[in-house]
Amino acid sequence: MRKKGLLFVFVFFTLFQLMLSGQNRAVLSELQTTLLIDSLENLLPDASLNEKVKLYDTLGSLAGGLSVNRSLHYYEALINLPDSVTGFKLKVRTTKKIADIYYSLNNDEKADKYLMLYARRLKQFPQVTGKQFLHGITKKAMDTESHYFSFTTRHFLIILLILLLLSVVYLWRLHQKFVTVRQKKFRYQREVEIIKNKNQEVEAELEKIILSKTSVEEEKVESIRKKHLKLKKELNNLEEKLYRRHAFLSGLGPDLRTALSSIMGFAMELKTEVKELDNEELTNNAAELFAKISQLDIILENIVDMASSNINVLSFSIQPVNVAELFASVKQFMHHLIDENRVILKTLIEQNIPDVKADKEKLKRVLNELVFNASGSIEEGNIEISAKHVSASDEIVIAISYQGKMHQDDDPGVLNNALSTAYYLTDKEEGVRIIGLSTASDLVGGMHGKINIDNKEGVITIAIHLPAAGHGKGTVKHKPQKMVTETKKPGVDIFLVEDDRMNRLVIETMLKNTGNITTAVDGEETLQIIDEYHKKGKVFDIMLFDINLPPPWNGIILMQKIREDYPQYRNVPFVAQTAYAMDSDRDRFLNEGFDDYLTKPINKGELITIIHHQLELFKNRNNNKE
Image 1 (cartoon, rainbow, N blue to C red):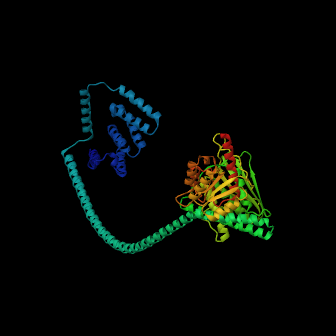
Image 2 (cartoon, one colour):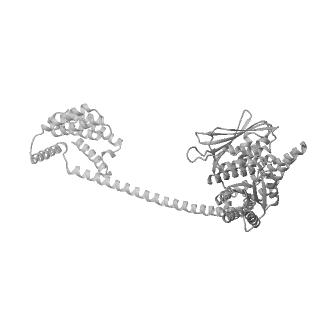
């Protein structure tokens, strides 16, 4: 009896600990649970069957938190006890627990077995009323209670004393924890306060250092800023000066062309006159003089174009250009500059090649520049200008190929670098050559094209890629103009208006074998001569008008005045000669009524060709009207 009482006290004490902690069975430490299970197992050998039922049920519940298999062992031992001892309800409940444990262990076979057993036993459950059922349970509980324990006042006092002691211990422990936590809180607050003060001291010291360093850096920054502003002002001044210089050079174009027109004209005539003297030394000197003047013309045009490009006033007039006419013009120009005994110049044009979309004058100057550079790169050899149409890209490829004894720096690497305007050589002659190539690149780029340079087996090829004008409808069909040589045409009356005396003399010399020339220097003299001829019933065959005349006249106003006052001159070609190379100016001349134009410096062959071409056109036009 005493043993049973002690067991009751131990179990009750354990359950009370669980209640005080507010936790379920899982909160017990493994050590406590193990000790409790071992203590209860020690009671099994001496326990009766009824006691074993309670012990196995308790052990199964306790062991569930430690080992599922151990809990299963206790529950299986429980249901193996006789039904008279365990009771029907306990066996049914235990059977369900065993089935759940086997399911948790993934042993479905045994789980299903016990679940079926559970179902069969539920069907066997005696059908009694609720009141009878409750009475039976109560009676059985009281019988079981009295069977296990003989509870006396002494037992009650012992349990109450134990509970009081446990409560005092528990409250004392809570108090100790509270005191400890409060002490830790005060200690942490003190540490935080100390750290905060240290942090403030460090921040103050750091701020002093930053201020001292910042003041020094601010002085440096201010000094740099002043230098930057100074350099910026100097840069602005330099850019302004550079812009003015480029604008000045760009504005010099007309004046330079006017001056060079007369110089080149005299040089060309001098070359022709000296050639008739049959003096080889004078002939060579005259040819060299003309070549130098032509070279000067190319250089000055490059400088003007480069300056115009830098101030964004370089414009282009893109239109279909006949490749054959272009090559003929270049070949005639280079005929005066290339020694044919030293360098052979050839042209090769693909049959039925379409027109190229380009600015005619600028493309002509690019070809002159590249051919002239090629001739200066070889002591003797061949230069070939070719043109072909590439159908895949619909572009015209104009190639200048040359081979022979080359200049030592004349290789594709140097030439490709020369295509950039930022690349210059220190050598004066090469520097001029490089400027020419870079200007040519700018001009071709402005015409929506590109330049490539290649070297294969000692043959350097400079290829210009430009869009083709296309085929079919809208294609401009040209009949190539053949360059006309000087032939006297008696009865051709040419009227020249030119205010510059040197240019007037040059043109008169160029046209002395072409026809009869009448000249005027300004608008008043022009109108006076026209009126005198009109009274005699005479009309000039062709009119050559300089655009830049003394005020209030210019070539456009004078041409329109003559055609308005003298209707017969509406059937006479007017050709503008101008030192203005801007494409917008040339387009304006044609739109205002001029039939053709020449840019200064004037090329003799081109001048004679245009005169003959315009006379032929107007002759056919007038015949068709009749």
